[in-house]
Length: 170
Image 1 (cartoon, helix red, strand yellow):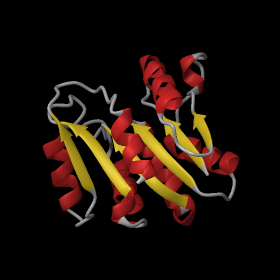
Image 2 (cartoon, one colour):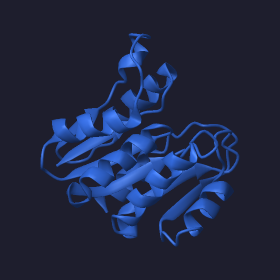
Image 3 (tube, one colour):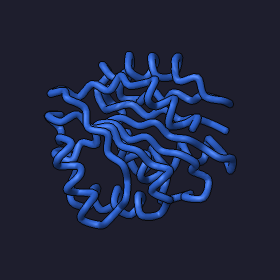
Image 4 (cartoon, rainbow, N blue to C red):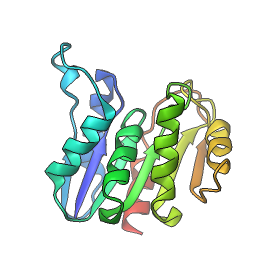
């Protein structure tokens, strides 16, 4: 079992990535993914390509995914490529305000391809990239059945590792 942790786009997400990786406490290997553009601005970020590369690296074994912000789109591409190897998924701060209609369709198709009981979303009520009400509305548009945990915050921070751990170990 591998737990893959996918951060948000900007380099300030490195601290969230490292804190989550150090404290998640799941069984098996934990793979914290550092985006190339954090250290080399010449590198272009392509969510679909990142999803493919990470899927290839993790092999055929079962995987859990914890993803924040643009990492949720990378997770969606991973799910679409190999839905049967994905065990549980935690999505935090899905950036609906920043995703294209095509990206939203990818997220929708990914969530429809795995059992809803294996996915949970944490979304702050007033997240500037898309609040919990927006996410609930988006998910209801295709009857996903995915649970949304709404947090009373007005930022894009998601330090809910104890709740992540409870879901993954449950």
